[in-house]
Length: 338
Image (cartoon, rainbow, N blue to C red; front, side, top):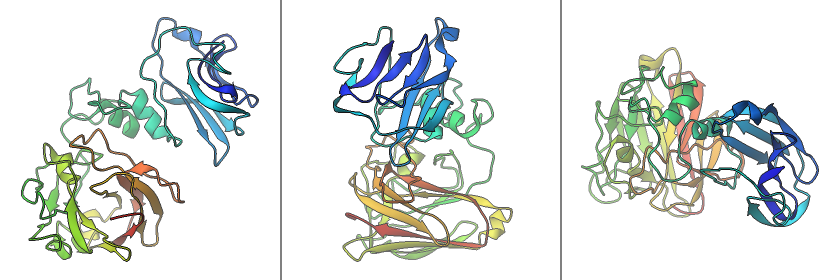
């Protein structure tokens, strides 16, 4: 037995056990994965152990795929986290390990698949071994391979609107040839940030459909404009003050997307770790902690929220999939700050 993660006294012990199986345990509630790692003799593998405490569900991932999932219970132990052993340091890990990382919230299967596909867990450039301009982790997460999405942009039609501030207004301006987004896409337009923080706070713009927006002001992040993604994550309309609000109303959608569409909503602030929610009328409301001030490290720092409660995960976009209809309205619900 050899363990990668443990606690000072009993509790969590995740690693390799019982002759070569990934093992997730809480001092009790012990579970093996389905695959014996001896079949990977001489090969690197990617392992992830996820525990969703709210749902009491544990999941073991091997090379980005579920190797086991099922009911779990809270760890029966105490003390600090140990890396490289369990229960105060016993049954230490023997072997080679690279890229050890921990998260305070349960990652989704899509996130695990992206990490297994080469997306770095730290602020490093994402892998692009096929050199098609799309990070391999994104391709694996979206379609399960690195060949289908080859080329500069995804073939599917995309139209987007980016909100500019008077701060960095010119440098952040996007156009129809700018490539940006979680799914790298062209077809963008930018609003005019105007003069002063309130200059671009309200208005209307068309890009095949019409976007009418209202807010209390505009501001920008520290992402500058080295590429399309950093331009996209530069300016924003702002919900300022205790009664602050921001709304984006989209109409005339069927003229461009009569057969249905996905709606990506990007959000953020000039400071990270600020709570808030994004709400689609007659749709889901997602909570977040802002994670958009990344000093120009997009697209590597895109992070999605799927939390429909008050978990406030670190995030900078939400995705509403499989929509239809000629109009949609999105509200930004202010939380702890602007």
